[in-house]
Image (cartoon, rainbow, N blue to C red; front, side, top):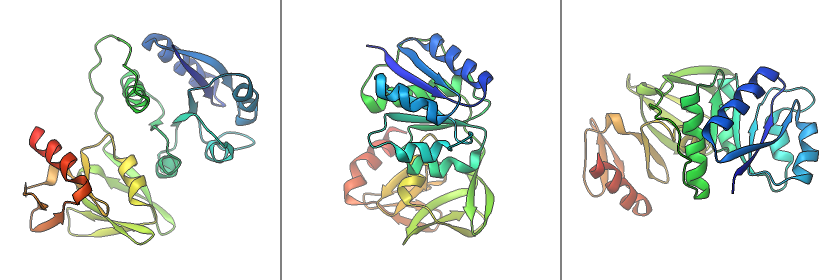
Length: 237
């Protein structure tokens, strides 16, 4: 059975690109294309929709607010020109967050993640090399959006209603987000959650044992519930 896709974007060229990518992948079909979220309500009432490809900045109602209004939303992949909404998107359990212009390789990566989440095999496509990860993200620090380079992050610690992001220069920043949102945001990067309160950069791990990972002189505990996954990931290389 093909995945039923709903495309919501106020830019016709973006809808055209998404439709072409879906046709190239196979195993998916478009049941509707909408220029705003209000138009999408009728399609959701009348069709089975497995995944929405959803823009954020649109007329009448923004994508994130539309998603919040749905009592039983399908899976969602955000497709937008604005990096700064990524954390908000993952807080809403988005499968992925694509930044325009979206390459076919990056689109395939998002669909692969979607299929993995719902337990489907990825349809056969032409050989696709993995796209390079984004070099940076924007995170809200106080009232500003701050650019954070991915390879400068050592580890992330949950701290009440915030997370502390520790950087390679010895500094840290405080971001008002949950650690689960950070885990989702960096799910396609080389990061690993090792404890309910910690996420670490795999690139910066200098050693480990059965109870902790080392990042230089800093030891981060491995949580009991995370130990099996952590050991499997580290020993698997």
